[in-house]
Image (cartoon, rainbow, N blue to C red; front, side, top):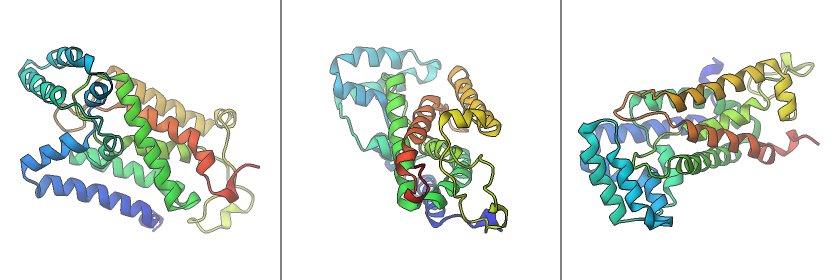
Length: 261
């Protein structure tokens, strides 16, 4: 069945994400897992303090303003730890995408990865697929730091990279098949150039997808929706940063034979 015939790079990506979460869930001691989060998740306040140590008091004030009084002391202690050891840790702008907050979180992400990563990998190959996902992950991390620079809540999840793949896919998957495409094997991508933004907006299916995706993420910005893990709210700003990166970069990373001339 086609649904089980994903490109190898997508299958490998899904296997890696699930293996990492299984390792953290079932193998690593709690102390090691905590070390993993501290050193591989993205902490906006850590990046902010590395660039501007004078923000220390603002970071402490933000930590003390936690909505749940029961965790305020823990947040303040963690904030003081970050202040004592400011470090930009640039690798965390990519490594956070390998970690997840719960099984629900990772399963939702791999479902979307299978759906939108597969057409991108088939169209432009493994390394371009990886470059798009990495660019989206980094862009999503940067967007999150810019929107919430004082946060000490770790950012985890592959959603920003997957959002970049969604944006890349939406530029070609909603087009009507070219004449004769109906008798082509399902694995082959449509040999069509990418649609520009005006063309996408004229394409009702693509425009509806964009409207629903953007509207849903704006809703996440107004309403905290948990992911099945304590204090694991959806990072709408990281999604948006990743989506924009994928949308804007894909024309330069598309397979050369399929680029608009």
